[in-house]
Length: 357
Ligand SMILES: N[C@@H](CCC[C@H](N)C(=O)O)C(=O)O
Image 1: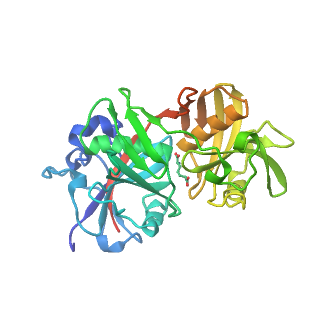
Image 2 (image 1 turned 90 degrees about the horizontal axis):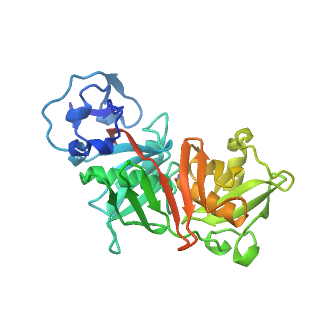
Image 3 (image 1 turned 45 degrees about the vertical axis):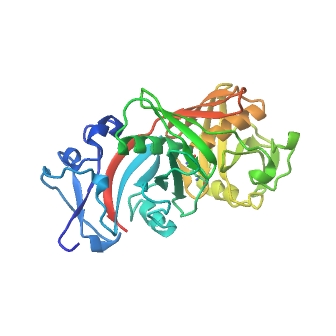
């Protein structure tokens, strides 16, 4: 490796989504033409790097992600409404190419690439096209990730050089998930059925109506919150307010202070994601989220699904809603017909690069 250099292209210079460029895949020829490139010595290992501007490369013919040097991770960074992920081509193995400890370093916004999680595109199992695994930025492994699965769909379409509408079956820790890339580039995902029984969410809160945990009291730092618990494969605690004030103003919340207290509350044996929700109308909700293992994020797809399910269970909203998150809106529908939840939203490539691991 001595004497070689590795580059990270920091931006898509055309500002066009990467998926629309999929015939060039992740080709350095294209990306090096005008982007500022980072250059570092592989031996530096997260600690230091130098920056320089390089002349365009003309000679490389293979896809960027086809290069398989050991000790180097090639990745593409995507985001879904600002919920950002490092996507890794792991299609040759069911063993993640990054350990949880390495994921923590890669996700670090000062000393690494910076992301809310690392996602692995793996071979399908049980007859599915692909499997998806994810590590949160704290190294823990959740069962599912809604924004992540939209990014995953765009990533594999680019890897496989697929154009136009596409649909995949994906095995996840939450079971079968089916994203569909639409003509307009947005991704609609069949997120499966919500899980509502206390033991399966899991929560130690008592079930109220028909075995579900709806508007149950949860005391956090002496304040009685009213919460509804929903699993979309991963656990969510949804609140529209406290016993004394039902009308939350979500912009006023000190999420960094109260978020961890919900996440680690003794009522949630597997920790929990928490959504704080303001009802704008019966078809329009606004939320902020504190994610298990990732903290305050700009969006949470499974969280938005859980919010609509909770709002319906509490009689606050219709089954089809726009959910505003800090990073932008998601369209969520909880179908009465088949009990499935559908999420529609964007997923965008941000940059690609290589990093020593
Ligand atoms: N941001 C994700 C959820 C990621 C997993 C979550 N932090 C957990 O631990 O359950 C989403 O968009 O759903």
